[in-house]
Amino acid sequence: MAIQSSSGGPQGVKASAPRLVAPQATVAERDGGRDEGLRPKRLCDYVGQAELKQVLAIALEATRQRQEALDHVLLYGPPGLGKTTMALVLAEELGVRCRITSAPALERPRDIVGLLMNLQPRELLFIDEIHRLNRVAEELLYPAMEDYRLDLTVGAGPSARTRSLELPPFTLVGATTKAGSLSSPLRDRFGLIQRLEFYSCEDLEAIVRRAARLLQVELLPAAASEIARRCRGTPRIANRLLRRVRDFASVKGHGQVCELVAAEALAMHRVDSRGLDASDRRLMELLIDSYAGGPAGLDTLAAALGEDPDTLEAVVEPFLLQLGFLQRTPRGRMVTEAGRRHLGAA
Image (spheres, rainbow, N blue to C red):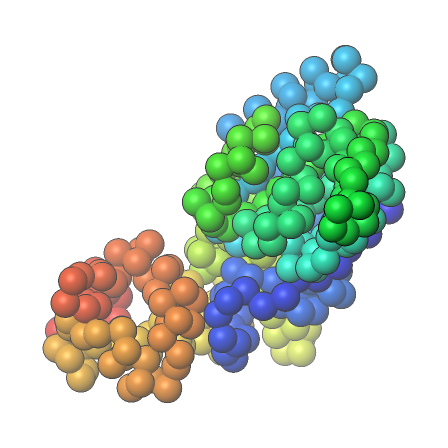
């Protein structure tokens, strides 16, 4: 199955130093296809997301029976959970090609027109970060999704006229980390709207063991559990940590990766037992040491850490909030008792 891709632009947050536990894809992972060999190809190989797989399995079987295009699908949820992978799985299950692009790459009307005009019957068009589509591209999609028709304006001024072009039946798969940012007209045109949840530790262990087999790493079950506990419920981070463990074991001469080797490798990268890295601990330690645990304002913390406030809010804080180690209050940020215990603070 051929794949056509184009990478997206910046995500609206100032760039900071790359983090091993960041859920966003790195440039190498996005442009170099580093995870291509680890992606499952069929729905039966896709680990986790049981409810999502059940819904899509029924839709796929009904589509195959009727020989129609699959309904348009919107996948939303945090980054790194497998939205792109699921789009590729859907294309593989239907036996069609998946064309991949991202919303920031569709800057001009001709970009989206060219994609739609080149689609073959029942093909999938995957648009990542679809909430960032500009208004013109979004309005071109409305008749294309609803009536398989492309409305183009030819000419300008009094001589302008509208020309309609028929499109073959196709499936648009949109992915977004911000479902609330989608306009209602666009969201209403999706037949299937599904959320991807964070993965359980058991599912992550299965993902790590499968990736280890594909990477030809001899990984003991306890080592797989050690990696799964530190990857923040995200398969992309699990694969990234596994690669760092593989590098460490290879250089240190460990033919078999046990729990101690995995823990030592990840400790070297400053990823602790709950998946916190140096940036997470710096924020919490600053709050405890300098502000007695808080509250402290976001701008104050950003200035003290030398970080951009938007980066701190969008990149560092979410996982700490998810774990219950940090609280956002009207007066500022506070470290919880659970956060203090994790750091070993009094």
